[in-house]
Image 1 (tube, one colour):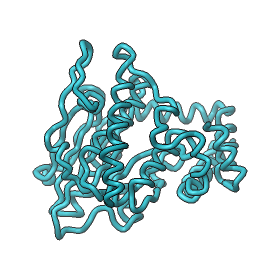
Image 2 (cartoon, rainbow, N blue to C red):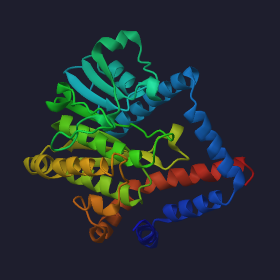
Image 3 (cartoon, helix red, strand yellow):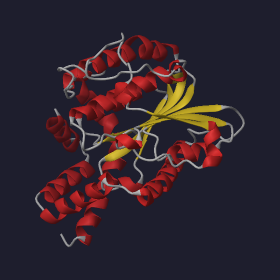
Image 4 (cartoon, rainbow, N blue to C red):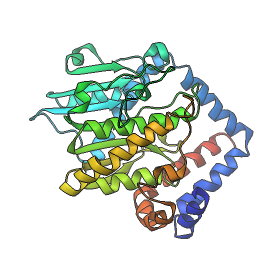
Length: 333
């Protein structure tokens, strides 16, 4: 579907996606560009404390840009505000929120540094309003019923995450390249189940996604679009300009009664069942395939979303194209 859908988007006038596709092909054929990205991955996979502190500052700035872009997903002080930060550490997003809204309180979930996660670097003066839970998101009990395993030590979701008290959920956990590829899909679905179980009806969801034209991202954008009162995207220049990644910001998720019912009675149960299926295969797990998400939208229906996707994500393709062209020029390509 991905290639055909990309062609449909390009044929319908997405010139920036066409340019980006050509630039990616050029990069794949160019050893110097491939080495550049390998070096970037090597640095990221072996981050020291100095780099983690720089990431915190950059992520704090990015959260501010997201907030400004939608005016606003984090209110100024004046009322209590509760947020959930998935993939929290080192803590840039949470730091921004806690500093902007002095009445805000938050919960962060992040992989333990002992297991390869980032260090918790939120400053001490903010920690009395912030709770950090070190855990592997994929090892919470996220199915419709409890499951047992001779391999994994599953744990129940903390009570705070089952009482729909969060005004904002941030889905920014990322897969470690040292883990099996299938665990990336399991982590993505785990984040969604936790968020949809935890937010107030009418909350805001900020989700990191990649490659708008991909079959997975199209479906994620569609489900956020259907559930929310408004959906927009933002691609931060810092850290994301040459990557395919960007953030989707959905406000008013499940706010109207019909959206609330759709979230509670349709989408959440389907994501929970999918989590169990991805956990199968003798404990090894399996990767997502497009038909897994047909409960959101099928391949046949996706074409009807093309114009909306182009409207949402044209700036994402435009920024990445410009950034890659600049990189190639700097590398003498």
